[in-house]
Image 1 (cartoon, rainbow, N blue to C red):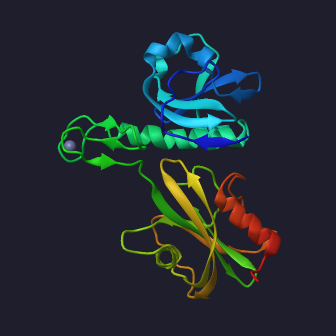
Image 2 (cartoon, protein in one colour):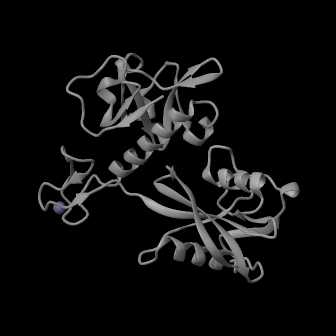
Image 3 (spheres, rainbow, N blue to C red):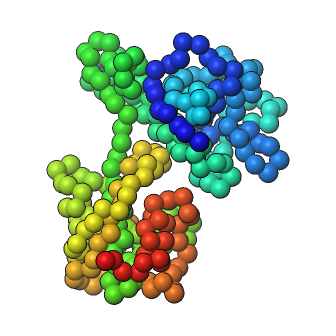
Length: 273
Ligand SMILES: [Zn+2]
């Protein structure tokens, strides 16, 4: 599948368009026996008038993709249901998951930028770029992204994994944290690992990146080597952390996440060259 992003609304609606519709963070899907699908224009015919805040996403294999919102109360007696996007991992094609994630970020962004943050006037979508502008004072807001680092720290063929109290499922993962104003990514890696578990790291290397639309993160992944210190929990965010070998790994995150890709890299390689 090939997705080509675009923000400019096509001049007319195509009958085969895909609609990534949200209501309070949940995605509308068509239930087909055991699998799920993204609704098409024909599935939404009775609801056209209820669609709010339409935004164009681009094309998937030539099919236009849109995002919009419909209040769940407006759906009656159809084979359409709202589901948590995370609950659709493995049930919806991964390409569709990522487009749905993109849609989720844009819907959230639009929701919290209905009014100008400077003068309070209702904002409008810009026509020449993906942005919202205030017609009174000209303040322009772009979709918000929150960059975060995520790090596989290695020590003697072991990987540092921790349990964050925010994890809904009881798994251990590589440590992560948001980038703060004024720091570069490497400084952020050092600060986060020091703050969360009291460990110093060195030899920080870029691994890869991934959008994480819950609600608007961009995860930037690194590997690093242990440089000193003993594990000392921060007492708030991380409730447990330890060094794990390949043979005694705890429950780890689902396949789709870059956290899991870092752990899988460790399992395959064990050490860095
Ligand atoms: Zn304004």
